[in-house]
Figure 1 (tube, rainbow, N blue to C red):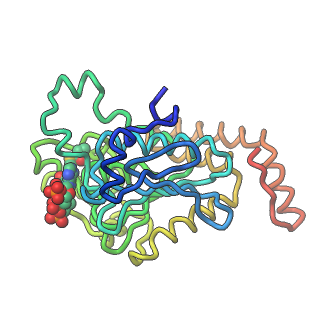
Figure 2: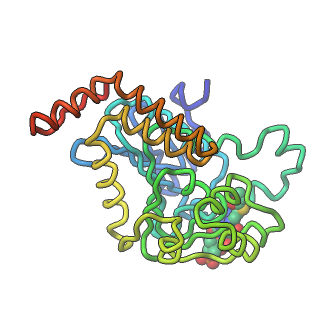
Length: 290
Ligand SMILES: C=CC(=O)SCCNC(=O)CCNC(=O)[C@H](O)C(C)(C)COP(=O)(O)OP(=O)(O)OC[C@H]1O[C@@H](n2cnc3c(N)ncnc32)[C@H](O)[C@@H]1OP(=O)(O)O
């Protein structure tokens, strides 16, 4: 059982110092966080918001921060009132990458034995729809976290990059794979081999980002998107997500079969009956996520 689950946080170890610096511990219903803020947003409070909050280090993804994202996601996953989840940072930085100070003295043995970065996978495995709302820098692991989400919305000053080559290493949390799949080999290779950043507008044109918004409107627009998704059946949304994600993993014929099996499975739900009945009765469906 993690410390968080029994009501303690890593943060409590140094809470006195943080209180003295005027920084607080950020609390959800049962869990206290040091590096993130969590909230429920939208008119029905059905959109979970995770805001990275390690501002001085540009939200560099230290071990504690990533663990807290995982804790918050797990909590939101089991909270049936939450239909979609938005992950965001600050206006200056979504996240400037894995924490370089933490990595500097790590050996191969440390990385291999402790499966360094493998706990980041929890973000891509979340069954609920996830939206990255990216303002400012999304570099290295920050770009990778954004790409682990299902949809990326960007503020017009956002900058994406995989600059690991400038540190003598390579992307390690899916950067080469996901970027190549998103924008194609030539563009991904150029970005990764030069360490150069891509603007929000370029990222939208290349296909990494769905939409670009003015900086101050970004998070609100991501929450509106979460609310729109939340109008539908949670089960259907989870099935859509599973089928789309499988298209990245499987050859076409297997992907088509997988989709068909999920489509057939959706016929076992009350929500499919309600959706089709409501259409024929010319009324709004009342989905029960069942
Ligand atoms: C999976 C592998 C990886 O992710 S490797 C990391 C990949 N990311 C990077 O290489 C980006 C590193 N950061 C930068 O290049 C710059 O900080 C910047 C371009 C994002 C912003 O530059 P600017 O000059 O505006 O700010 P500072 O460099 O002064 O940064 C402020 C403050 O944040 C600390 N910081 C920034 N990024 C990281 C990081 N990835 N890890 C640890 N710390 C980071 C930086 O050291 C500064 O701290 P300070 O105590 O004020 O010196």
